[in-house]
Amino acid sequence: MKLKSAVKYRYSKIFKISAVFYILMLELVIGSVIVKAVNKSDFAFEEYFSIIMWGFMFVLGIISYTGELNMFLQNGVSRQTIHKSFIALLPINFIFALISVLYDLFDYFITKKAVNPNVEFFCHHTFPGVSFLMPESILIKIIIYTFLVCACYTMIMTIGYMLGSISRSMKLFYKVLFGAVIIAIAVFFVVLYDYFSFEWFDYIMMALRSFFLGGYLAEYGRIPNFITALIVLCVINLSVSHLLINRATVKKGADRK
Image 1 (cartoon, rainbow, N blue to C red):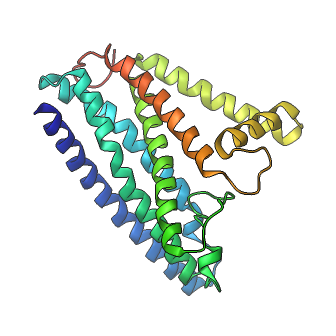
Image 2 (image 1 turned 120 degrees about the horizontal axis):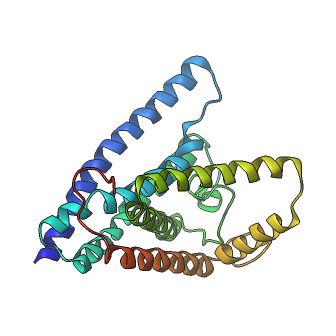
């Protein structure tokens, strides 16, 4: 019974947060259209759509751990039930994915004015620079892309959940230090890469492309490879989170320990 209650609570909270998020997104879309119409500018909100959605899924993953753990533990919900309730929450990504795919489709029909959308349509917002071999039927494309985007959002949410579990297990000083080191390393390599050519970096990127898309220089991604890679990452993220949640303790107030 506690599992059912925990899942119900999670879905209720996520729906409320998502409602506010999508209202803000709608306002941004409308504002973008008005700005382009009035100022004749080239600003396009849809170019940032994928980044915003990925960020939203990531945040949902983090708050699904850090925002709920204390409350569940204090109310006698077992650690296994807490973890299972998060896994039961993941199918909500299908709804988010369907909204994203329909938005892509709407944008392609209206703003791109596609001549033959049954052939040309692909999720250019969710998967910028990546396309998959698809049948010509627009309905089949919507179904397939919805499952692909759902898998992508699920993976991102589990990453947030895992990092939330790691962050909560660390003291504040180490959280700040860890974050600063990650940012410094990222900036360092970005700056270096602008000035030098690193063959090893190209090899890493090619290996990642092969892992996710099934080929080093494949023009089209291979759906089975893509789904398998995302499932592997999800399993790793959930496994790490499961190990950490078994060691988690109730913390009073903010996480200061």
